[in-house]
Length: 114
Length: 113
Image 1: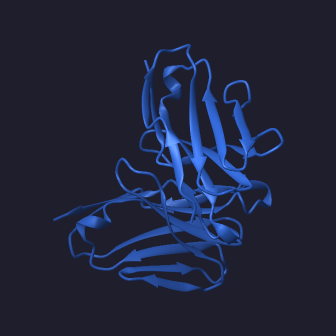
Image 2: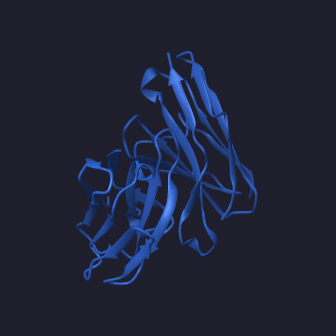
C-alpha cells in the first residue's frame, strides 16, 4: 500500500485565517480523497482531488471554503479558508490501494480554530 | 445518499470477553470495508468483503458479509487491551461510486484490563 506524508499534524489558528494541508504520496495515484472527522465522529468525505481537473465536492462542501490543488499524481493540498471554530476537526487525505481493495489514510491534521 | 448504519456506538468489555459490531445498509452493497482507528490515530484498513455470505478471519477477528449483502459484522474473540479503538465499516459512496467511501458512525471499543 501507499505511504502518505501529511502536514501539518496539528495547528491552532485564529478565526478568519486560512490553513493549507499537504499530502505527499510515495507513488502515483489517480484519485486522492479529503475527509473531515469532527471530534468523536465518523469520517465525512469533503472532495475528490483529480489530477488535471477541478476537484469534485460532496454536498455541503464548496470550493470557496475548501479549495483543493492536485498539481501531480503524488501530491495534493486542501485549504480551509476563512476559518471559524466550527471548522475545528481532523482533516485526512486518503488514497486507494492497488486494485482498489482498501484505502490508506494520512496521519491527519488536527485543526483547532480559536 | 447511501447510508451505512452501525451499532453499537460504544462497547466496554472486560479483557477476555468477546465483542461484536454490526453494520446495516438499506441497499445492497457491492462491497464493505472495515477500518480500525486507535485513539489519536488515523483509520487503518482491516479488510474488504465482496461476496455474499463471505466470512474472513484475521487471528481473533472474524468478518462476515450477509447473504443479501446488506449487512456485515466484525467479531473479536477474547479481546485484549490492544483492541481498543473505534471500528468503522464503510461502503461504496453515493451515486454508485466504488471509489468514494461512506463510513458508518463507528463503534468505540474500550477494554478494561
